Image (spheres, rainbow, N blue to C red):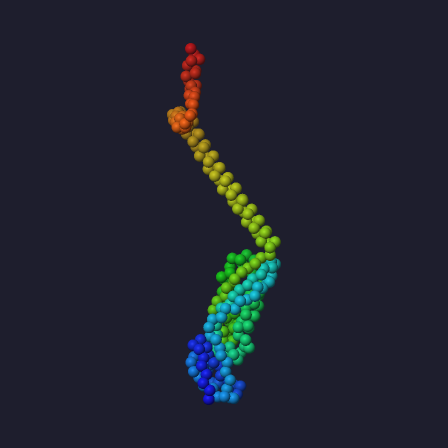
Amino acid sequence: MCIKIVQEYERAVIFRLGRVLPGGAKGPGMFFILPCLDDFKKVDLRTVANDVPPQEILTKDSVTVAVDAVIYSSIYDPTMSVINVENADASTRLLAATTLRNVLGTKNMSEILSDRDSIAQEMKSLLDQATDPWGIRVERVEIKDVRLPMQLQRAMAAEAEASREARAKVIAAEGEQHASRALKEAADIMASSPAAIQLRYLQTLSTIASEKNSTIIFPLPIDMLAAFAKK
């Protein structure tokens, strides 16, 4: 009888004469095997991050995008992960790549750019369901990057710039409209009140007088000139 040890995050699936030993996986800690009769395979229960290579995907609106993602998964049933799939990590990674293409192929480009969280959640649900017979739990899916063709990037940048310029013109036009309305209201008030015109006249003279080295010429009011003309 041989003594074997597995770590806290590991389990050992024991085979005796080719059959899985009843009682489930062993560990953590020490366990015994029979030489020449038993064989065992260690299974790591820690969460694994699997990078999905960039996938060239044709979207629903016929735009080619390159998308890469990362899948976080862990093994919850060591025995199933050994007897039901040859390589749990590699199989999960390949399945994630095909699922990514299938899911994004049903989306428009705008949806892919704006709804990453919902797409990741949809992928997680599909992957978790598919890997359940393997004893694997998909914990999280992240869309890392979405790359558009350079020509499309330039077109989108030009569209955004045109939109900003149009918005700036609208804001400037609205400002001129408000200023014109304010000037008209001020002109109406002055036209209806001669005292307001005189007050504005005095304010202008005061502003000019506050400047250094200024020579002020006071024009005679029209009514005074009219009085001299009568004489």
